[in-house]
Image (cartoon, rainbow, N blue to C red; front, side, top):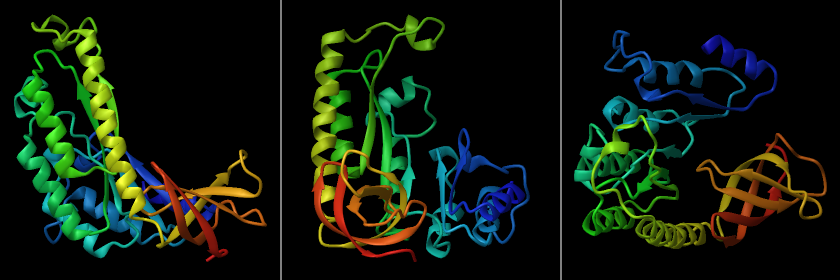
Length: 265
């Protein structure tokens, strides 16, 4: 895998994303080295590749999230200050019914330790509403956890009943109108939190990796902060693929708008 990253770096790639189902359990059969498991050893090896300036990974899982990975965010600066960490539900009862091998106390503890390791960390998540048997109390637990965790953004889904899945034959299927009401509340709450977090970016300078030209606006380009927030700004020249500094002027929900300060870094 490291050889592949080196090839990408030689071709001009500056940011990579390590993908995998429970990606943080990569190399779990490997011997530890100085208390570091296989995945952290991989991150360290990729971090040494010249030309790579940003490293992301998706999606980690609480069952494989060890302290060595938390600590990696304190000494590997190429690791982006963003992690996608699926929560699914704020109710322990529902998590158990979903056969998720963790509880929300564990989840929140991980989020807290991650933010201690990297204070500017942005956490995004996945949430499902309307799982069979979900009560109003269960749903309120999810809303409460969202308020406490303050996710940068969230992918919110309505449970969909499908044949062949364990949930299909479960009793107490949640009516469609109830699921619709709950997802509406959930999205409204997350939109408020996202706007508040975006507002905190105003007046600050961020390093942006320019990804593309925004064709909706003249001479406008877009890219992402280290924390994954999308930023739009104007430039007189084509700077796609470059790192630049941008000062944020305004925020619009999950999108930021700013002024270019420096060209290629």
